[in-house]
Image 1 (cartoon, rainbow, N blue to C red):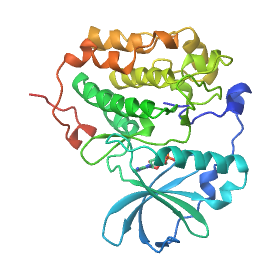
Image 2: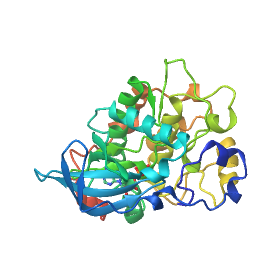
Image 3: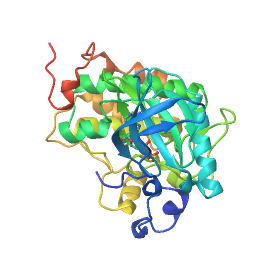
Amino acid sequence: EPNQQPISQKDATSHPTQKKKKEKLSSLCKTPPQLIRSRTGKDFYRGLFLGEGGFARCFQVKDDAGQIYAAKTVAKASLRSEKTKTKLLAEIKIHKSLKHQNIVDFVDCFEDDTNIYILLEICSNQSLMEMMRKRKRLTEPEVRYFIVQILGAVDYMHSRRVIHRDLKLGNIFLDVNMNIKIGDFGLAALLASDSDRKKTICGTPNYIAPEILFDKEKGHSYEVDIWSVGIIMYAMIFGKPPFQSKDVNTIYKRIKHLDYQFPVDMSCSDDAKDLIQILLSSQPEKRPSLNDIIKHPFFRGQFPYDLSSECINRVPKFP
Ligand code: ADP
């Protein structure tokens, strides 16, 4: 699945295919010391490297009590521009304000001389992206199990007037018990009121809602997250997102014309197809509300009580 990186306004309006190879800001982030001393006096011991994104590197850390966290580490050297600083502060402010069992818990935030550390709940089973790489496709009971938890988190965010705007397999983490934990609030927006609208072009090409690209005047709102849930559900069932193409302009064209098919050689229930179809409504106001989605017949099918982490590698057998 190429084109996983989120786009900024500039990338989207200029020539996305000719995007210059920018130096990743995360490369400025040096490995933190083995003993991280926060300015508040609490010490943390650095452990395994967990992964890196656009401007952060993530490490496992342990506190004195032996409690393990994920520390998202941002080099202060990468925060020279006011814009980057403002963005990081916005991400912290929004993430800090959210507390839900299906959202990565924001634990603390501190700094030393070189880095800023965001301490997060550890998600030891990685993200749905890694799981999909191994499994290719999920069974419908698994999809039901995951989508219900994703919807729970989205419902909560929307009730707090937060739009995530970058929901995708790689931002949906799994804890040790295979519970969904939505993370990365780097593109999230806090609305001033429910009628407020956002105009910044952002998202990740495969998951981006049509109104973000083609209705710039009018702006977008909560419905963009519902669209992304439709993309995620399609990707879980068929192993790739519906508008997947080699180049970004083709993806955008296909989104504009709602040009996707259900593969005929893969089994999928009519209920699942129907739900995907209504989630992927071109017009945002035609998309179902979270309340409507949960009442859809798709969710009346087999529902696992819990999932074992073995299903990351193997198709589970349900009784
Ligand atoms: P960025 O905002 O720079 O894109 P991310 O939030 O995507 O950074 O984090 C970078 C990587 O760190 C992720 O791809 C993932 O591998 C890992 N990671 C992030 N948060 C956690 C977490 N809570 N638990 C475990 N690993 C995490």
